[in-house]
Image (cartoon, rainbow, N blue to C red; front, top):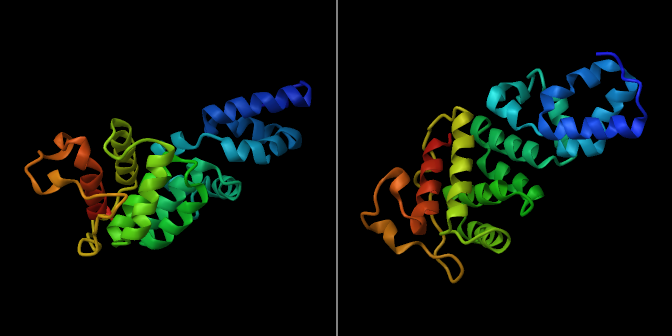
Length: 219
């Protein structure tokens, strides 16, 4: 791709628009020359670039020694919400550092709903009820109640993201799993009842069961 003969401010806006759509379309600008290369690696682009297509195409591209790792790490340094979220899930699933991943997710909480709910559910898996309760309250305060359809959709998204990482299903946290039951977050009464199976769990207890399913997927 030849470096286009356009004013820098227009080029910068074009690159920012392209980056917000799909990281893969930035390759031509990186190769076009020093000017556009520097624009691609600017703080604004790295902090907002859409890496979701990279995750769905092949998550191994951004793993250590993956072909996109350098770009990934630069975006991580700029606290790109998607990059931080996926990197922390990778640490939990492939490195087995569930506690560390939960702690590191706090950098983008409550800015990202998936990260907020994911961190809360990981704390449930670890049996860290006080921290889980606090994170559930963060989600409720900034987004929606835990029994809402929105919470269910976000829980499903987190579960699906973990599934795409090809998790080991080690179930080592099965015995540490503990759902909060305090003045702010209560264990749903229907958990102990016959509330259906899988997608048929009601919204009142779905986050509990989603946490349980995620717990079984972890190392």
